[in-house]
Amino acid sequence: MPKLSRPSRSAQGFTLVELLVVIAIIGVLVGLLLPAVQAAREAARRMSCSNNFKQIGLAVHNYHSAYNQLPTQMSGTGHGTNSGSHPNRTNGNGERHSIFVGLLPFFEQQALWEQISNPLVGRTDGGNSGWGSVGQPWVAFGPSPNVANYPPYLTSVPALRCPSDPGVGLPAYGRTNYAACTGDSPFRGGVGAADQNLNRNAARAQMVRASQRGVYVPRQKTAFRDILDGLANTVMAGEIATDLGDRDTRTDPLANNSAVTLRAESGGNAQAPVGSPAQCSGNAGVDPERPQFWSSSASTPLSVIWGGIVLDNLRGYRWASGFPVFSQINTMSPPNTAVCFQFANEQGTNNVYNRSGVFSASSRHQGGCHVLMGDGAVKFITDSIEAGNQNATPVAQLGTGISAPGSKSPYGLWGALGTRAAKETIEEEF
Image (cartoon, rainbow, N blue to C red; front, side, top):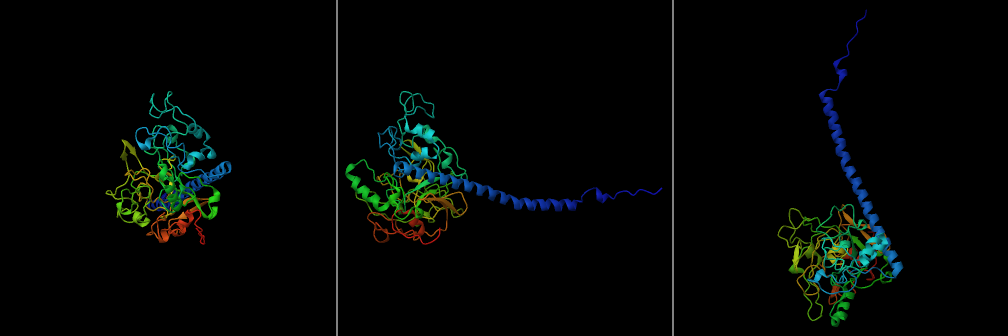
């Protein structure tokens, strides 16, 4: 009888060397795959972000079709009366609403619009008396967007959020990743032409005409007919990153920079601006080891206290507020550069909540951000877009040379895209 041969040991399993080789190959494949997965996820988030912006653009066009004008940045029910401190008006919103309040019914937020546009009973702090109680409901169209216990302002609106931005919750009242474009000059961006002193309204209106050259003008009606440079050549809104509490130079504005302030107005006469965007985004206050963040010694508005109220004047923290830091961009500095309250409060006080300044577009995407053009198109603008002379002073009423009223934007292609009627020809792709 023939003998049966036994199988060799080598056929029963892998050797240690073979296992190590297989593990190494798997590790290399995982290392190659994970960045691709992350890139695919970010691409999906970026597409969703762009789609949200397109919906906002469609809402703007539908609003214009309904009312024959654009939604007004910093609009509302008038100044009302004070209740305590100035930014905390309760008997009226002080004409501080952003464009997004009026747009609510046009991007499927009719229920939220109904809450705001009608008297409302409801408080977030559970109080049984005072504003929001049964005996004293919130006024129609709401209080100032600074009021913390008004429920609609605390609502997170999905259409106003970019999925790439991880910021959520307090201390923000309701975040927005999209902001209205007010042009290439910050002067009067915080208050517009309105003023309770009627003797100064004409002078203020003249200042606004000279400097506020974007699609949206604070507290002033605009329409598509005002955009003489062409809807396809004019930025209507831009993307912004919201603050994460990490002193990011793009979201936590540098404050109290005395070297680049506007002299306060005196007797209703405007003073010419001094300073430039370069002085905002320069090295002053920036951490040399982490250039995207302010150093610990830089003065920023984190937890500024005024009138007993903590005002977190940080980027994108109030979708309902029309103030520059919350829902405005200007086309001075390129996207994703430092923001700052570069210019003094137009009302001549030391408060920062309504200061204008250098507030460029920004995002959590790599290399740039989205902008919404006047024709509703959404385009991705790179950080390297040509932005002209960053040492130039912005256009203002009493400016001279390249800063004189009616001048073309000193901030190159980026500045030209932000102006609605400066007669500038867009000759390059962006």
